Length: 352
Image (cartoon, rainbow, N blue to C red; front, top):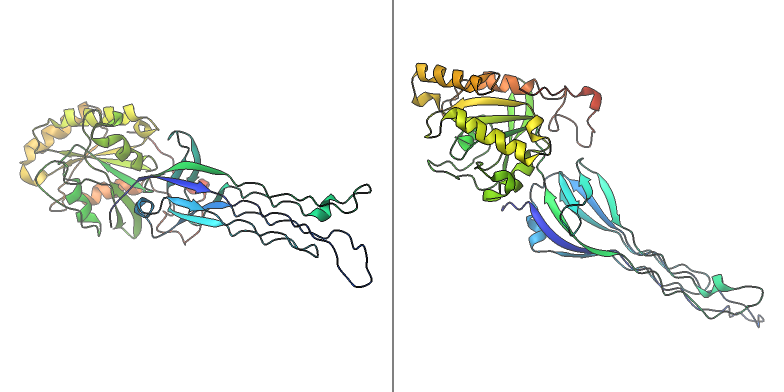
């Protein structure tokens, strides 16, 4: 399945049904009076966050959504049927933005969450409601109120407990393949990963979701390599794992500063999230070099460095133990479907 994290769609709620013009016609009742019923209400546009979706690809092929119109009123004071609401199902973590792509209208963060964005138009009045002491046989009626319509942008921000960041070719795909059931593409070249990926990590009888985003480059926060879109997928993470390639031409301390700078430039609280610095590919160098680079990273600002090998799994347990320290009592994958997280059970974040 292709991954799509942004889509523009048109939505319109249903128009209210027209009121009826009708008069009682019964035997021996010469002037029965008006009995036209009101029109039915138009359908609402409702967004619902559901499980089983992690992409907006469906909205590439279906871009217009219109709720049903309300039914017309009828004689004998019968109100028209209300139009069916149109429920648009989106992945958990989807934001609905105005056409300016900045104003957030809805933020769908919980499974089963439903929110009405556009309300259907009210039905028109039937002629019975216009009856008065001076107008005993009105022939006027309301046509029904129009629905609302607008263009909106859908933007998906993946919901994950931990996020994986680093420069291109830092070994993130190998890392996520080692600790999850994900089958990410692996290659000895930059930008092997071209789209965000999710994987479920099982460690010490716990489960949490790990998000892997494509490698960052300088200027990512300003959109270089569409990095600003990728960074949006880790906004909701509790902790970030910063993977640094010990075997790269880029000095580890420089790699640390580049990514830290992009997190700070992007904003949205990314630079305030706790970071775990992992020195990757230690299986390719000797122990002394690992110690030297670890010391260099600590001098550059890392409180603690975790030497690991994504290929062999060496050092993974210590790193994952550290990740568990930032998780709530029960993560999304550990809670029963539909159960809302208790804020009091969250562990506090403390930046490195």
